[in-house]
Length: 483
Ligand code: NAD
Image (cartoon, rainbow, N blue to C red; front, side):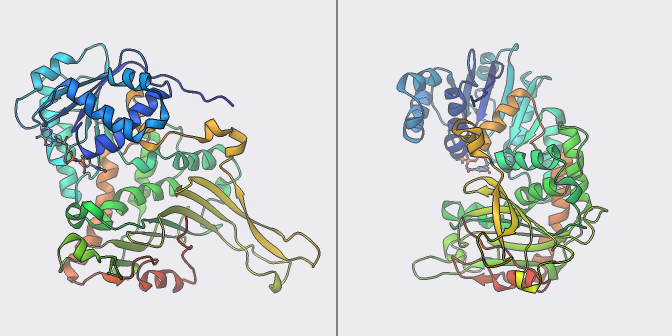
Protein backbone atom coordinates (compact mmCIF):
# COMPACT_ATOMS: atom_id res chain seq x y z
CA UNK A 1 0.00 0.00 0.00
CA UNK A 2 1.51 3.36 -0.98
CA UNK A 3 2.10 5.94 1.69
CA UNK A 4 -0.22 8.96 1.40
CA UNK A 5 1.62 12.19 2.10
CA UNK A 6 -0.42 15.29 1.45
CA UNK A 7 1.80 18.38 1.30
CA UNK A 8 0.83 21.22 3.61
CA UNK A 9 0.34 24.78 2.40
CA UNK A 10 3.41 27.05 2.28
CA UNK A 11 4.24 28.52 5.68
CA UNK A 12 6.69 30.57 7.70
CA UNK A 13 7.63 28.93 10.98
CA UNK A 14 9.57 30.87 13.58
CA UNK A 15 11.26 28.79 16.28
CA UNK A 16 11.88 30.98 19.31
CA UNK A 17 14.66 29.14 21.12
CA UNK A 18 15.79 27.75 17.75
CA UNK A 19 19.29 27.04 19.09
CA UNK A 20 18.07 25.23 22.23
CA UNK A 21 17.94 21.58 23.17
CA UNK A 22 14.32 20.94 22.19
CA UNK A 23 14.73 22.61 18.81
CA UNK A 24 17.85 20.58 18.08
CA UNK A 25 16.62 17.23 19.32
CA UNK A 26 12.98 17.32 18.26
CA UNK A 27 11.67 20.25 16.25
CA UNK A 28 14.33 20.56 13.53
CA UNK A 29 14.70 16.79 12.95
CA UNK A 30 10.89 16.51 12.78
CA UNK A 31 10.71 19.26 10.14
CA UNK A 32 13.51 17.65 8.19
CA UNK A 33 11.80 14.26 8.18
CA UNK A 34 8.55 15.79 6.90
CA UNK A 35 10.58 17.57 4.22
CA UNK A 36 12.23 14.29 3.19
CA UNK A 37 8.79 12.64 3.14
CA UNK A 38 7.53 15.31 0.73
CA UNK A 39 5.02 16.88 3.10
CA UNK A 40 6.87 20.19 3.20
CA UNK A 41 7.56 21.63 -0.21
CA UNK A 42 7.55 24.88 -2.12
CA UNK A 43 8.03 28.29 -0.62
CA UNK A 44 8.51 27.42 3.04
CA UNK A 45 10.73 29.16 5.57
CA UNK A 46 11.89 28.07 8.98
CA UNK A 47 13.37 30.93 10.96
CA UNK A 48 15.41 30.25 14.07
CA UNK A 49 15.07 33.09 16.58
CA UNK A 50 17.12 33.03 19.76
CA UNK A 51 19.43 35.05 21.92
CA UNK A 52 22.55 33.48 20.45
CA UNK A 53 24.43 35.86 18.12
CA UNK A 54 24.43 34.16 14.76
CA UNK A 55 23.54 34.80 11.12
CA UNK A 56 21.57 32.66 8.66
CA UNK A 57 24.73 30.99 7.33
CA UNK A 58 25.81 30.10 10.86
CA UNK A 59 22.37 28.66 11.64
CA UNK A 60 22.38 26.55 8.47
CA UNK A 61 25.80 25.26 9.43
CA UNK A 62 24.64 24.40 12.95
CA UNK A 63 21.49 22.65 11.76
CA UNK A 64 23.35 20.95 8.89
CA UNK A 65 25.89 19.44 11.29
CA UNK A 66 23.13 18.34 13.61
CA UNK A 67 21.06 16.65 10.90
CA UNK A 68 24.11 15.09 9.28
CA UNK A 69 24.73 13.45 12.62
CA UNK A 70 21.20 12.45 13.63
CA UNK A 71 19.38 11.89 10.34
CA UNK A 72 22.23 10.95 8.00
CA UNK A 73 20.61 7.76 6.80
CA UNK A 74 17.35 9.46 5.86
CA UNK A 75 18.31 11.38 2.74
CA UNK A 76 21.16 12.31 0.45
CA UNK A 77 23.33 15.43 0.66
CA UNK A 78 21.32 17.31 -1.98
CA UNK A 79 18.10 16.85 0.01
CA UNK A 80 19.82 18.11 3.13
CA UNK A 81 21.07 21.19 1.24
CA UNK A 82 17.57 21.85 -0.10
CA UNK A 83 16.21 21.75 3.44
CA UNK A 84 18.96 24.01 4.79
CA UNK A 85 18.17 26.54 2.06
CA UNK A 86 14.78 27.07 3.73
CA UNK A 87 16.40 28.13 6.99
CA UNK A 88 16.94 31.65 8.21
CA UNK A 89 17.92 33.15 11.54
CA UNK A 90 17.29 36.26 13.62
CA UNK A 91 19.08 37.14 16.84
CA UNK A 92 16.28 38.26 19.09
CA UNK A 93 15.60 39.19 22.68
CA UNK A 94 12.22 37.98 23.92
CA UNK A 95 12.26 40.65 26.62
CA UNK A 96 13.82 43.54 24.75
CA UNK A 97 13.51 45.17 21.36
CA UNK A 98 16.46 43.54 19.63
CA UNK A 99 15.61 41.62 16.49
CA UNK A 100 11.85 42.26 16.37
CA UNK A 101 11.79 44.70 13.44
CA UNK A 102 14.08 42.38 11.51
CA UNK A 103 11.83 39.41 12.20
CA UNK A 104 8.67 41.34 11.24
CA UNK A 105 10.29 42.41 7.97
CA UNK A 106 11.10 38.81 7.07
CA UNK A 107 7.57 37.47 7.54
CA UNK A 108 5.05 37.56 4.74
CA UNK A 109 1.41 38.40 5.20
CA UNK A 110 0.16 35.90 2.61
CA UNK A 111 1.60 32.89 4.41
CA UNK A 112 0.53 30.73 7.31
CA UNK A 113 2.62 32.02 10.18
CA UNK A 114 3.46 29.74 13.09
CA UNK A 115 5.51 30.71 16.13
CA UNK A 116 6.99 27.91 18.18
CA UNK A 117 7.73 29.03 21.76
CA UNK A 118 10.61 26.63 22.47
CA UNK A 119 11.78 28.76 25.38
CA UNK A 120 11.21 28.85 29.13
CA UNK A 121 7.54 29.56 30.02
CA UNK A 122 8.52 32.81 31.80
CA UNK A 123 9.05 34.22 28.30
CA UNK A 124 5.66 33.17 26.86
CA UNK A 125 3.79 36.37 27.72
CA UNK A 126 6.69 38.57 26.54
CA UNK A 127 6.78 36.80 23.20
CA UNK A 128 3.01 36.99 22.76
CA UNK A 129 2.98 40.70 23.58
CA UNK A 130 5.81 41.52 21.16
CA UNK A 131 4.28 39.48 18.39
CA UNK A 132 1.10 41.49 18.68
CA UNK A 133 2.94 44.79 18.94
CA UNK A 134 4.71 44.02 15.67
CA UNK A 135 1.49 43.13 13.91
CA UNK A 136 2.27 39.41 13.81
CA UNK A 137 -0.67 38.04 15.81
CA UNK A 138 -3.45 38.37 13.22
CA UNK A 139 -6.07 35.67 12.68
CA UNK A 140 -3.93 33.31 10.68
CA UNK A 141 -0.99 33.38 13.07
CA UNK A 142 -0.65 30.54 15.56
CA UNK A 143 1.59 29.89 18.52
CA UNK A 144 2.86 26.58 19.84
CA UNK A 145 3.74 26.30 23.50
CA UNK A 146 5.60 23.53 25.26
CA UNK A 147 5.20 21.94 28.61
CA UNK A 148 5.50 22.68 31.47
CA UNK A 149 2.34 24.75 31.25
CA UNK A 150 2.50 26.08 34.80
CA UNK A 151 3.43 24.34 38.01
CA UNK A 152 0.00 24.70 39.63
CA UNK A 153 -3.42 26.10 38.87
CA UNK A 154 -2.47 29.69 39.72
CA UNK A 155 0.61 29.76 37.45
CA UNK A 156 -1.26 28.00 34.61
CA UNK A 157 -3.95 30.68 34.86
CA UNK A 158 -1.27 33.37 34.68
CA UNK A 159 0.21 31.78 31.56
CA UNK A 160 -3.22 31.46 29.96
CA UNK A 161 -3.99 35.09 30.74
CA UNK A 162 -0.62 36.20 29.34
CA UNK A 163 -1.33 34.44 26.05
CA UNK A 164 -5.04 35.31 25.89
CA UNK A 165 -4.23 39.02 26.07
CA UNK A 166 -2.71 38.78 22.59
CA UNK A 167 -3.99 35.60 20.95
CA UNK A 168 -7.34 33.92 20.64
CA UNK A 169 -7.67 30.37 22.08
CA UNK A 170 -8.10 29.09 18.51
CA UNK A 171 -4.56 30.29 17.79
CA UNK A 172 -2.90 28.59 20.77
CA UNK A 173 -1.46 25.06 20.39
CA UNK A 174 -0.40 23.57 23.74
CA UNK A 175 1.71 20.53 22.98
CA UNK A 176 1.47 17.23 24.79
CA UNK A 177 3.52 14.99 22.57
CA UNK A 178 1.80 11.88 23.93
CA UNK A 179 -1.28 12.94 21.98
CA UNK A 180 0.75 12.88 18.77
CA UNK A 181 1.63 9.22 19.13
CA UNK A 182 0.19 7.03 16.41
CA UNK A 183 -1.12 4.50 18.90
CA UNK A 184 -2.92 7.09 20.98
CA UNK A 185 -4.83 8.16 17.91
CA UNK A 186 -5.39 4.56 16.99
CA UNK A 187 -7.00 4.12 20.38
CA UNK A 188 -9.66 6.62 19.28
CA UNK A 189 -10.03 4.86 15.92
CA UNK A 190 -10.48 1.51 17.64
CA UNK A 191 -12.96 2.87 20.17
CA UNK A 192 -15.06 5.00 17.83
CA UNK A 193 -14.54 3.36 14.45
CA UNK A 194 -15.78 -0.09 15.50
CA UNK A 195 -19.00 -1.26 17.10
CA UNK A 196 -17.14 -4.03 18.87
CA UNK A 197 -15.65 -2.20 21.83
CA UNK A 198 -17.92 0.70 22.75
CA UNK A 199 -20.76 -1.47 24.17
CA UNK A 200 -18.24 -3.07 26.53
CA UNK A 201 -16.46 0.16 27.40
CA UNK A 202 -17.98 0.75 30.82
CA UNK A 203 -17.99 -0.41 34.42
CA UNK A 204 -20.30 -3.31 33.65
CA UNK A 205 -17.57 -5.03 31.62
CA UNK A 206 -14.32 -3.29 32.52
CA UNK A 207 -12.83 -4.37 35.84
CA UNK A 208 -10.19 -1.68 35.96
CA UNK A 209 -7.79 0.34 33.86
CA UNK A 210 -4.09 0.71 34.52
CA UNK A 211 -1.79 3.25 32.94
CA UNK A 212 1.96 2.89 33.34
CA UNK A 213 4.61 5.26 32.03
CA UNK A 214 7.91 3.79 33.21
CA UNK A 215 11.38 5.07 32.51
CA UNK A 216 14.56 3.10 33.10
CA UNK A 217 16.83 6.14 33.26
CA UNK A 218 17.27 8.59 36.11
CA UNK A 219 16.99 12.37 36.00
CA UNK A 220 20.26 12.64 34.07
CA UNK A 221 21.19 16.19 33.11
CA UNK A 222 17.73 17.53 33.98
CA UNK A 223 18.27 17.23 37.73
CA UNK A 224 17.82 20.87 38.61
CA UNK A 225 14.62 21.25 36.57
CA UNK A 226 13.23 17.90 37.67
CA UNK A 227 13.79 18.54 41.34
CA UNK A 228 11.59 21.65 41.09
CA UNK A 229 8.94 19.58 39.36
CA UNK A 230 8.64 15.92 40.37
CA UNK A 231 6.75 13.08 38.74
CA UNK A 232 3.28 14.39 39.58
CA UNK A 233 3.82 17.68 37.75
CA UNK A 234 6.15 16.37 35.07
CA UNK A 235 4.12 13.33 34.01
CA UNK A 236 0.79 12.80 35.79
CA UNK A 237 -0.77 16.24 35.37
CA UNK A 238 -0.25 16.17 31.61
CA UNK A 239 0.67 12.89 29.89
CA UNK A 240 -1.10 10.40 32.14
CA UNK A 241 -4.16 12.62 32.50
CA UNK A 242 -4.43 12.97 28.75
CA UNK A 243 -4.26 9.20 28.30
CA UNK A 244 -6.88 8.71 30.99
CA UNK A 245 -9.15 11.22 29.24
CA UNK A 246 -8.93 9.43 25.89
CA UNK A 247 -9.78 6.11 27.51
CA UNK A 248 -12.63 7.43 29.63
CA UNK A 249 -14.27 10.09 27.45
CA UNK A 250 -17.68 9.77 25.85
CA UNK A 251 -17.76 9.50 22.06
CA UNK A 252 -17.52 13.07 20.72
CA UNK A 253 -20.08 14.02 18.08
CA UNK A 254 -17.26 14.46 15.60
CA UNK A 255 -13.48 14.28 15.49
CA UNK A 256 -13.00 18.02 15.78
CA UNK A 257 -11.04 20.15 18.24
CA UNK A 258 -13.79 21.39 20.49
CA UNK A 259 -15.91 18.25 20.34
CA UNK A 260 -12.97 16.10 21.50
CA UNK A 261 -11.67 18.58 24.05
CA UNK A 262 -15.12 19.17 25.56
CA UNK A 263 -15.38 15.44 26.26
CA UNK A 264 -11.88 15.26 27.73
CA UNK A 265 -12.65 18.18 30.01
CA UNK A 266 -15.77 16.43 31.30
CA UNK A 267 -13.62 13.45 32.31
CA UNK A 268 -11.21 15.61 34.28
CA UNK A 269 -14.10 17.33 36.00
CA UNK A 270 -15.59 13.94 36.91
CA UNK A 271 -12.38 12.68 38.56
CA UNK A 272 -12.67 12.00 42.27
CA UNK A 273 -10.19 13.83 44.46
CA UNK A 274 -7.36 11.47 45.38
CA UNK A 275 -7.30 10.53 49.04
CA UNK A 276 -3.90 10.27 50.80
CA UNK A 277 -4.50 6.52 51.19
CA UNK A 278 -4.79 6.15 47.40
CA UNK A 279 -1.48 7.65 46.39
CA UNK A 280 2.09 6.43 46.83
CA UNK A 281 5.09 8.52 46.06
CA UNK A 282 8.62 7.25 45.85
CA UNK A 283 12.20 8.30 45.31
CA UNK A 284 14.86 6.00 43.92
CA UNK A 285 17.68 5.00 46.23
CA UNK A 286 21.31 4.32 45.34
CA UNK A 287 22.36 0.84 44.37
CA UNK A 288 25.89 -0.27 43.59
CA UNK A 289 27.26 2.14 40.99
CA UNK A 290 23.87 3.73 40.39
CA UNK A 291 23.49 7.00 42.27
CA UNK A 292 20.32 7.66 44.21
CA UNK A 293 17.94 10.48 43.33
CA UNK A 294 19.17 12.82 46.07
CA UNK A 295 22.80 12.63 44.99
CA UNK A 296 21.88 12.88 41.30
CA UNK A 297 20.11 16.18 41.91
CA UNK A 298 22.68 17.23 44.53
CA UNK A 299 20.17 17.85 47.32
CA UNK A 300 20.38 15.33 50.17
CA UNK A 301 17.16 16.58 51.82
CA UNK A 302 14.95 16.91 48.77
CA UNK A 303 11.49 15.40 49.07
CA UNK A 304 10.67 15.61 45.36
CA UNK A 305 9.16 12.37 44.07
CA UNK A 306 10.59 10.39 41.17
CA UNK A 307 7.66 7.94 41.31
CA UNK A 308 3.90 8.21 41.76
CA UNK A 309 1.21 5.55 41.80
CA UNK A 310 -2.39 6.38 42.50
CA UNK A 311 -5.94 5.17 42.24
CA UNK A 312 -8.78 7.37 41.10
CA UNK A 313 -12.36 7.06 39.88
CA UNK A 314 -14.26 8.79 37.13
CA UNK A 315 -17.54 9.51 38.84
CA UNK A 316 -20.09 9.26 36.07
CA UNK A 317 -22.62 6.72 34.81
CA UNK A 318 -20.16 4.98 32.53
CA UNK A 319 -17.34 4.46 34.98
CA UNK A 320 -18.82 4.39 38.50
CA UNK A 321 -17.12 1.45 40.26
CA UNK A 322 -14.23 1.00 37.82
CA UNK A 323 -10.94 2.17 39.33
CA UNK A 324 -8.23 3.78 37.25
CA UNK A 325 -4.69 3.06 38.48
CA UNK A 326 -1.90 5.33 37.28
CA UNK A 327 1.83 4.97 37.87
CA UNK A 328 4.93 6.61 36.53
CA UNK A 329 8.51 6.82 37.61
CA UNK A 330 12.18 6.92 36.83
CA UNK A 331 14.80 4.20 37.28
CA UNK A 332 12.18 1.50 36.99
CA UNK A 333 12.66 -1.99 35.59
CA UNK A 334 12.33 -1.03 31.92
CA UNK A 335 11.38 1.88 29.72
CA UNK A 336 7.84 0.83 28.99
CA UNK A 337 4.55 2.68 28.73
CA UNK A 338 1.15 1.15 28.26
CA UNK A 339 -2.51 1.45 28.99
CA UNK A 340 -4.27 -1.78 29.91
CA UNK A 341 -8.05 -2.08 29.83
CA UNK A 342 -8.69 -5.16 31.95
CA UNK A 343 -12.11 -6.67 31.30
CA UNK A 344 -14.10 -8.61 33.89
CA UNK A 345 -14.17 -12.38 34.16
CA UNK A 346 -16.78 -14.25 32.16
CA UNK A 347 -19.84 -14.44 34.42
CA UNK A 348 -19.75 -18.23 34.51
CA UNK A 349 -17.03 -20.67 33.51
CA UNK A 350 -18.44 -23.67 31.68
CA UNK A 351 -14.97 -25.24 31.63
CA UNK A 352 -14.66 -25.75 35.37
CA UNK A 353 -12.12 -24.52 37.89
CA UNK A 354 -9.22 -26.43 36.29
CA UNK A 355 -9.48 -24.23 33.18
CA UNK A 356 -8.10 -21.40 35.35
CA UNK A 357 -8.96 -17.72 35.38
CA UNK A 358 -8.85 -15.92 32.04
CA UNK A 359 -9.51 -12.33 31.21
CA UNK A 360 -9.53 -10.21 28.12
CA UNK A 361 -7.05 -7.37 28.31
CA UNK A 362 -6.75 -4.66 25.69
CA UNK A 363 -3.22 -3.28 25.83
CA UNK A 364 -2.24 -0.04 24.17
CA UNK A 365 1.55 0.10 24.12
CA UNK A 366 3.08 3.54 23.71
CA UNK A 367 6.76 2.72 24.02
CA UNK A 368 8.78 0.96 23.00
CA UNK A 369 7.18 -0.83 20.02
CA UNK A 370 3.95 1.15 19.71
CA UNK A 371 1.02 -1.16 19.15
CA UNK A 372 -2.35 -2.43 20.30
CA UNK A 373 -3.02 -5.98 21.44
CA UNK A 374 -6.15 -7.76 22.56
CA UNK A 375 -5.64 -10.76 24.81
CA UNK A 376 -8.20 -13.43 23.97
CA UNK A 377 -8.77 -16.80 25.54
CA UNK A 378 -8.61 -19.85 23.27
CA UNK A 379 -8.27 -23.57 23.61
CA UNK A 380 -4.72 -24.75 23.87
CA UNK A 381 -4.12 -26.58 20.59
CA UNK A 382 -3.71 -30.34 20.58
CA UNK A 383 -5.20 -33.25 22.44
CA UNK A 384 -5.44 -33.26 26.21
CA UNK A 385 -8.86 -31.86 26.83
CA UNK A 386 -10.20 -28.35 27.14
CA UNK A 387 -7.25 -26.39 28.45
CA UNK A 388 -7.49 -22.65 27.99
CA UNK A 389 -4.69 -20.23 27.20
CA UNK A 390 -4.55 -16.49 26.56
CA UNK A 391 -3.04 -15.34 23.29
CA UNK A 392 -2.46 -11.83 22.05
CA UNK A 393 -4.29 -10.65 18.98
CA UNK A 394 -2.09 -8.02 17.36
CA UNK A 395 -4.27 -5.12 16.32
CA UNK A 396 -1.58 -2.90 14.84
CA UNK A 397 -1.73 -4.69 11.53
CA UNK A 398 1.76 -3.70 10.45
CA UNK A 399 1.77 -6.60 8.03
CA UNK A 400 -1.59 -5.77 6.51
CA UNK A 401 -0.59 -2.14 6.02
CA UNK A 402 2.87 -2.80 4.65
CA UNK A 403 6.18 -1.47 5.95
CA UNK A 404 5.72 2.07 4.62
CA UNK A 405 2.44 2.60 6.44
CA UNK A 406 3.77 1.00 9.59
CA UNK A 407 6.75 3.37 9.57
CA UNK A 408 4.73 6.26 10.89
CA UNK A 409 5.97 9.77 11.70
CA UNK A 410 6.94 10.53 15.27
CA UNK A 411 4.73 12.64 17.50
CA UNK A 412 6.50 15.94 16.86
CA UNK A 413 6.30 15.46 13.09
CA UNK A 414 2.56 14.89 13.23
CA UNK A 415 1.86 17.68 15.69
CA UNK A 416 3.88 20.31 13.85
CA UNK A 417 2.07 19.41 10.63
CA UNK A 418 -1.24 19.73 12.52
CA UNK A 419 -0.22 23.24 13.58
CA UNK A 420 0.39 24.17 9.95
CA UNK A 421 -2.93 22.62 8.92
CA UNK A 422 -4.68 24.51 11.71
CA UNK A 423 -5.98 21.41 13.45
CA UNK A 424 -6.11 21.78 17.23
CA UNK A 425 -7.70 18.41 18.01
CA UNK A 426 -4.53 16.89 19.47
CA UNK A 427 -3.56 19.95 21.51
CA UNK A 428 -4.69 20.85 25.00
CA UNK A 429 -7.15 23.66 25.53
CA UNK A 430 -6.55 26.21 28.28
CA UNK A 431 -9.50 25.08 30.41
CA UNK A 432 -8.37 21.44 30.19
CA UNK A 433 -4.93 22.30 31.51
CA UNK A 434 -6.40 24.34 34.34
CA UNK A 435 -8.82 21.56 35.29
CA UNK A 436 -5.93 19.06 35.35
CA UNK A 437 -3.98 21.31 37.73
CA UNK A 438 -7.10 21.74 39.82
CA UNK A 439 -7.09 17.96 40.34
CA UNK A 440 -3.35 17.51 41.00
CA UNK A 441 -2.82 20.60 43.21
CA UNK A 442 -4.52 19.15 46.35
CA UNK A 443 -2.43 15.97 46.13
CA UNK A 444 0.79 17.96 46.00
CA UNK A 445 -0.43 20.32 48.74
CA UNK A 446 -1.16 17.27 50.92
CA UNK A 447 2.42 16.07 50.50
CA UNK A 448 3.77 19.52 51.29
CA UNK A 449 1.66 19.68 54.46
CA UNK A 450 2.63 16.24 55.65
CA UNK A 451 6.36 16.92 55.33
CA UNK A 452 6.87 13.16 54.87
CA UNK A 453 9.65 11.85 52.72
CA UNK A 454 8.80 9.82 49.62
CA UNK A 455 9.30 6.06 50.03
CA UNK A 456 12.65 4.76 48.85
CA UNK A 457 12.72 2.16 46.07
CA UNK A 458 15.56 0.22 44.53
CA UNK A 459 16.55 1.08 40.96
CA UNK A 460 15.46 -1.49 38.39
CA UNK A 461 12.29 -2.46 40.29
CA UNK A 462 8.59 -1.59 39.93
CA UNK A 463 8.78 1.16 42.54
CA UNK A 464 8.00 1.02 46.28
CA UNK A 465 6.20 -2.07 47.62
CA UNK A 466 3.37 0.17 48.80
CA UNK A 467 2.56 0.85 45.15
CA UNK A 468 2.05 -2.88 44.62
CA UNK A 469 -0.19 -2.99 47.70
CA UNK A 470 -2.31 -0.18 46.24
CA UNK A 471 -3.61 -2.86 43.88
CA UNK A 472 -3.25 -6.09 45.83
CA UNK A 473 -5.50 -4.72 48.58
CA UNK A 474 -8.17 -4.39 45.88
CA UNK A 475 -7.51 -7.97 44.73
CA UNK A 476 -5.71 -6.79 41.59
CA UNK A 477 -2.17 -6.71 40.29
CA UNK A 478 -0.08 -4.32 38.26
CA UNK A 479 1.06 -5.71 34.97
CA UNK A 480 4.72 -6.46 34.73
CA UNK A 481 6.84 -3.56 33.48
CA UNK A 482 8.39 -5.04 30.36
CA UNK A 483 9.34 -3.78 26.92
P1 NAD B 1 17.34 25.47 26.19
O1 NAD B 1 17.82 26.16 27.41
O2 NAD B 1 18.20 24.40 25.61
O3 NAD B 1 17.12 26.54 25.03
C1 NAD B 1 16.52 27.76 25.31
C2 NAD B 1 16.49 28.60 24.05
O4 NAD B 1 15.83 29.82 24.37
C3 NAD B 1 17.85 28.97 23.47
O5 NAD B 1 17.75 28.92 22.07
C4 NAD B 1 18.05 30.42 23.94
O6 NAD B 1 18.84 31.19 23.05
C5 NAD B 1 16.63 30.92 23.90
N1 NAD B 1 16.42 32.04 24.81
C6 NAD B 1 16.60 32.09 26.14
N2 NAD B 1 16.31 33.33 26.60
C7 NAD B 1 15.94 34.07 25.54
C8 NAD B 1 15.52 35.41 25.37
N3 NAD B 1 15.43 36.26 26.40
N4 NAD B 1 15.20 35.82 24.14
C9 NAD B 1 15.29 34.98 23.08
N5 NAD B 1 15.67 33.71 23.17
C10 NAD B 1 16.00 33.26 24.39
O7 NAD B 1 15.88 24.95 26.53
P2 NAD B 1 15.10 23.70 25.86
O8 NAD B 1 15.49 22.47 26.58
O9 NAD B 1 15.24 23.75 24.39
O10 NAD B 1 13.59 23.98 26.29
C11 NAD B 1 12.76 24.95 25.67
C12 NAD B 1 11.34 24.82 26.20
O11 NAD B 1 10.83 23.54 25.90
C13 NAD B 1 11.24 24.94 27.72
O12 NAD B 1 10.01 25.52 28.04
C14 NAD B 1 11.27 23.50 28.18
O13 NAD B 1 10.66 23.33 29.45
C15 NAD B 1 10.45 22.86 27.08
N6 NAD B 1 10.70 21.43 26.90
C16 NAD B 1 11.94 20.97 26.61
C17 NAD B 1 12.14 19.63 26.40
C18 NAD B 1 13.49 19.09 26.04
O14 NAD B 1 13.58 17.88 25.81
N7 NAD B 1 14.52 19.90 25.97
C19 NAD B 1 11.07 18.74 26.48
C20 NAD B 1 9.80 19.23 26.76
C21 NAD B 1 9.63 20.58 26.96
